[in-house]
Image: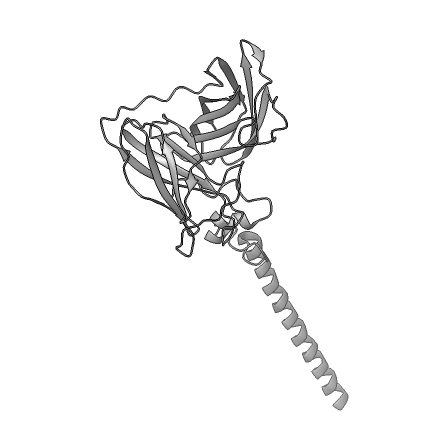
Length: 308
């Protein structure tokens, strides 16, 4: 009888263990199925169906190899605690005028330390709402952090002014920023139609041919070839550390794209073909401004590029 009781107890214990194991395996199978379907059970795969705010925006810049050429599209006056503050909301029409502004950091103080980017500590751009009147300047900074940009005469209408810079200290050290503000120039504003997309443009007797098939949100290469009277131009002079500078603005919202040259200037005889790293944030028509220098004269060619 004693032997039979011990055998029964052993059988009941084994059954209990088997039942517990079955329940455990069932629970694991349930979790695994949930993870495969939603990503919630796998480390590093949380919210894979709907990216959280921390998976986009500025956090992307912290991923190796994912830092953009400049944070944002240049349409904000503030980014990551850095703010562009203008001294005036309007500028006169038909005559040269100085535009003064400051860049303040996350601590609210004017930033006075800037890294050199393409030979300058500050690049300043002005563009009218119809993508005409492009100006690219290099303002000077006073000791208190106030920058002064000497603008040429502006036509009546709304203008957007951009400051492109890289802080040399603080939270944004080493990061490229493009901030902007709008100003109003009084008078009757007449909009000029945007020229149709074309791969060529002429300026001062030079012909510029731009090739590439950029897609929004993807990195592509653009090549620009400079010719004159049908012959390749090989006497391009260094300008901002390279042989050409390329800037682009999106039709409608005036989003900014700074297209970086892929080669540095090496001597005074560049050309005829120049390559640029291009990243356009959105599709549509973009107005490109390509600047190059020959014989001590700076030339600016403009053309419209369609981005798919």
